[in-house]
Length: 434
Ligand SMILES: Cc1cc2nc3c(=O)[nH]c(=O)nc-3n(C[C@H](O)[C@H](O)[C@H](O)COP(=O)(O)OP(=O)(O)OC[C@H]3O[C@@H](n4cnc5c(N)ncnc54)[C@H](O)[C@@H]3O)c2cc1C
Image (cartoon, rainbow, N blue to C red; front, top):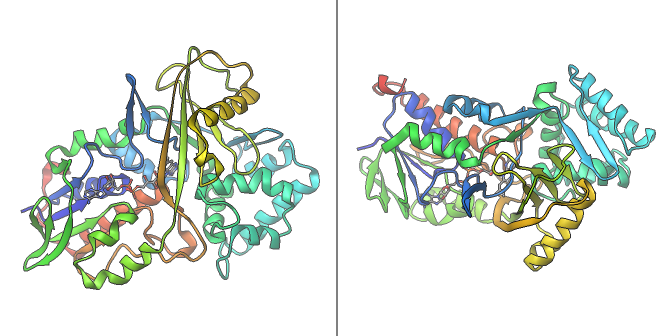
């Protein structure tokens, strides 16, 4: 009998499995799909492997970096000092120690008036003075208005950061989580604000490496259909296994069904059933030759506009255009969307080479809407031995909470592993996994 079951092989489940296996615990990870990675995975497309959706990481993703180093794939990330390039606006943080990098970056930013730069700097100073902790959560747009941020500054700077990081429009996004993101991306150390771009598909980054290293402890194509208490722990319907501890690391939308036989979990199931979802759409474009990107990541417009990424690492001439959150674009015919985005891209990089192929991938429930005071469940549950891992859990206190991100998922998985190790410290150590 495996003593610990992890249900779900996204980055949260994988991080948990690696941590527990390294501590010598008997762990089995059940993943319903034929591959690992969940919402951050590789997808085969006409002979190349692309990402299910374009992702971006930042230097502050400490737990993610630690996982990639452990898996031996951290070299697949390209690190660059932060640059936000949007038509009519450019912010570049120079290689200076914090907070000089932000101060000089703002001072030298293009496309903002001196008054706007001063207003933005004053806002960051005000947040720093309260340690980025708001007395109460509210929509990010209300916070920005309270701090007298002019609409043009919001459209050029704050709204694009909010939508990209929280996948939730500034009007409905949690101001507290927005503050947490600003603290870690703009106001942290210079290295924290660096952009980390994957230079291999997401599957190669985590899923493949985890599969190779954890081997038979990973069961692909094994869906768990229910969890019930048994005399010696939990019975998992589907694999028909009995285990002592369970880490439920599935998409939060799947929780209510899986928790149906555990009455103590009813409140958590109900809270999560109240979440709403945001899509992310990625348009993949394959050109005959690489378009001339002045920087690998380019904003294509103000506010809620797509971002283009040069992805020559996957195939020469490959470009990903990613559009966060819900909006009219989701309902446009595919050809119309492609043509609109090709126009925007041409405005940013000049004449485009011949287009060979294209594909749109829409993840309808890419993330939960990161709204104010969302009731996020703890990793520990009212059922002893049952833990929750995933980007939606309250892994840290509210004033550290992350939006739905890879870092949030990995931290959550690691935290569950540590809770299990602390709860059962005397398990036999297996030197094979040291
Ligand atoms: C298109 C897109 C773009 C994104 N961009 C970014 C970005 O730029 N930066 C960033 O940090 N984050 C980004 N995110 C968010 C990030 O991908 C997620 O926050 C993260 O991957 C969530 O990981 P997770 O392990 O919590 O959940 P998931 O990835 O959802 O993993 C859950 C796993 O559980 C499995 N499963 C479900 N039910 C069962 C069952 N019954 N039995 C067994 N297995 C089951 C699923 O198949 C899945 O593999 C993006 C997400 C998407 C979709």
